[in-house]
Length: 419
Ligand SMILES: *Cc1c(COP(=O)(O)O)cnc(C)c1O
Image 1 (cartoon, protein in one colour):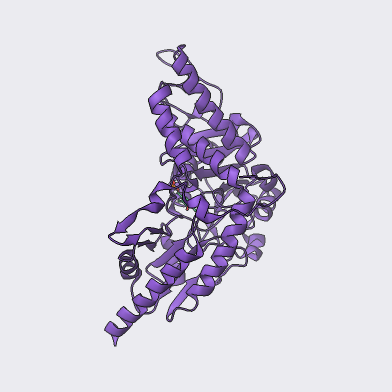
Image 2 (cartoon, protein in one colour):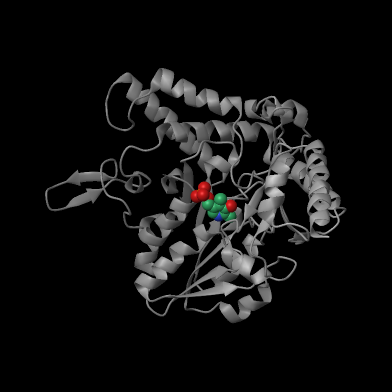
């Protein structure tokens, strides 16, 4: 697929879909899969499946240790994937690009390796009310250990951050501002660059949770000027169990080891050790080698389509989906930010979100229902749970139409039951 650096090439989703074997299956007899749970995890193209298969069939060996040919090939492939990831997010250097199990582990790594040294009693960790539990609980744990306080940027009814509150919330006590680039519930894309520059103005460091943004739009770590960026491979067509923490050069030098063991050491004596250079300093033990290689293949795959093209396509599809969902009686969309991605949460007057998800599942449609790892946000919006349809570049208007048809069925079925 041609993709000039500055041109946004449209792509044909019907052609794209052939790259994803699972999209061709029926989940019930006569019910082809309509997969709309991409904010939870995405499907994998043949390019990624083949990379995993080839790795285990042809080059499986442990990395960075043996001197034999396969170990060298495995190490080269593993490190080549790191280079791809670093370029993909425009990280300042590869020394600061660490493999983790995913976003959750990446954030926990920052909390331990950096937070325990740089956040103390009386300091503030500033978060937002729309954070995924993965960008909330690690800070609760750090606050409990250090005596730091948590503060939160409020979220408006439409699902936008109240940036006016930053004047009040940002002071010299704030050591870290950690926030999601795109909300997995409301779809809101937060103004990361602006928040980062205001945070830096009071000397705070910035962690950006890129779990929902990196797979769906161009994300340039240096342009956004964040100190830390975390994302997961499985939400961008890669395997589960692999993700990235990228850190600025100064931050990476400030971090102490999190996990100890093989791979992360330089010299080991019985009573003390010295550390390997970053990033290996933070990669104790045998890593997820195939996962890293699969992640590299996923990045290569989606870069071939083009992040600008993916973003443009999803914007259009999300606008279509919201307009169609708005025609379903009794359906309320939660999250109407001007800047938003393609995760669309909603409630229905007639039925609980779990009943909605069960009902549409019988039509072969996979959506999410529940608190979506954002219980405080549910409480703030006064709902116990929501349903969520989340789109990716292999979804089509036909997928949206199938969902809307099924949701009309929900309204009829449960609406009648209620009468
Ligand atoms: C999915 C998600 C996470 C957690 O990612 P894992 O892959 O489960 O570690 C964190 N933040 C956001 C916004 C997410 O959507």
